Length: 522
Image 1 (tube, helix red, strand yellow):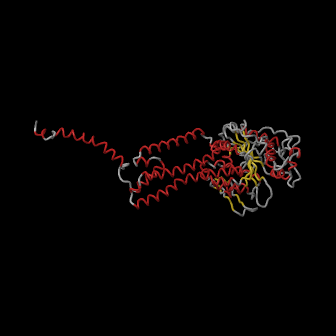
Image 2 (image 1 turned 90 degrees about the vertical axis):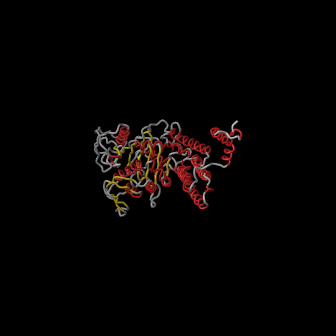
Image 3 (image 1 turned 60 degrees about the vertical axis):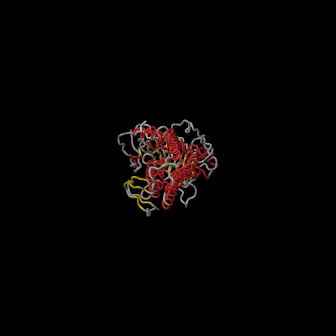
């Protein structure tokens, strides 16, 4: 036995092998001590880095917990967040472009937004605590605490703002659109077939001249939007306010009361813009109280050879607020338009491309200074077309509260609430479809002596043409002012009806509708 063995000292090689065995023997105690000490940080966090990780956790829940060494909690938060995003994405993909479906979810969306605001605030607070702000100096704790409080308010604000917008929209819907079966002429809405098998739906858009010095409703502008359900292609029919002696469908109360057309004992001889108010003032002739909208829909539908399904009457001042809510309308003004009073003393809308405010857009469509009713009609349909094209989803969303407030000024409509989600989806198609326009003005159509057969044939042709591929050649603009219609191949003039007024004394050139891009420079 060597001296080394006697004293119990191992050789150098054995010493090096024995050291790891002692370290492994001490391992469990060291690990237990490390666990009891809590999470370990790579390096101490500063105030700026702590706030940075807290803010990152708002965008990526669980990031702060991972940085704090709490991996299980961090991974769980990330997994829950991913599941929420996947659910939302699935809902969006399932509904696709059917954006109208979300209208029926307003209550659920509001509740989800409230829950989301509370959850994100709690997440922000938990992330800050997980980073152990107590390790900071006293000043650092104060600064970071105040900053996190401000950040908490900022995190909850988008949820609160969106919930307020949803509530505003729901309130506007309840005030504008009727609920229940208030109109017996409107069939119940079927979710699987909201248009009841029709391939075309017709809306009467009425601009009410509701000035404070007038009583009742005077329909200052009347436009029918005939929309093809599948493509969204739309034809706008503009009818003169001074169209005389309109006929009513046979068998209706007004048809029996005025078998030879609307004449009444009226000072102006029975103009189209007097029909609504006459029906309201004479329920015995209209077949009941408050029949003005229905009677006007019947008269215009019978004139065009269409069935008018729904109407919407908008007060002219409400429309001005609606234009302001989307930031104005860009319109090509063909010539200077003076507005305000009889002599245009309020101002002048200069020729050229202009961005018109709500008031200017209103007077652009209504001014009579140096022009006639038919020129006004042309400008009015350009305003309608500009609004349809320029009220983009982004503008609507960014100005939604103002739009909802302005929409409440709509006087009345018979569009039921149950139809709204389908109507929104149809509006999306209209924006992507082709909009053409036809107005019944001299010299092709005379308001004092209308040729009803001619009007119906022109309407049918405009609808038929709207379903054909867009023509690539420029179509010559017809005479009759800036709103003149486009001409096509002449056809023989229709025979006049036996019981109707005298036929329009002009050659029937079978005018066709023209796109608003050509007419209005949209």
